[in-house]
Length: 150
Image 1: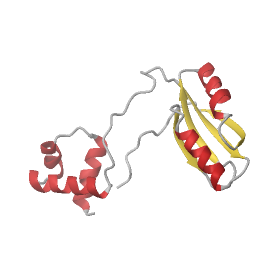
Image 2: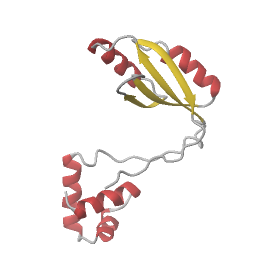
Image 3: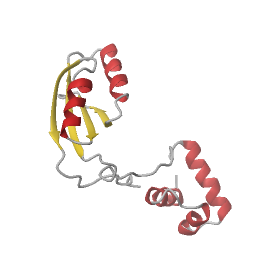
C-alpha cells in the first residue's frame, strides 16, 4: 500500500458515495488506474464494504449504555456460547472481549430507559456464562465514527 492507496481510502472514509470519476479527481489519477487500485483494495480486504451512517437520535434511539460483563468461566465452550448469543442481540452495537476484569464491554443502544431495563433483564442477564453485569450510561459521544488514521 502506497500513499495513493491511502489517499483513496481516506477519501472513501469521508464519503463512500463518491463516483469513480470524483474519486479519481480527488486523488489525481486517471479513471482506469484509480479503478484498478480501488478493486485491488476491495480484493485485499482493506475495504470491507460500503454503508450509510445513520443518526440514532433521529431514529428514536436515544439511550446508550456501556455494559461490563464478568463471566463465570473462561472455557472455550462458555466463551463461544456467550459470543454467539451476544452477537444475536441487535441492540448490542459493539461487543469487545477484554484482558482482565471485566471480561467484556458491550455498547448498547435502546429507545429509552424502560427499553434498556427490559433488554438488561430479559436478554443480557440471561446470556450464557454471565456471572455479573454492571453498566454506566453514556452522557455524550465526543468522538464517534472517526475514520481510521492512515
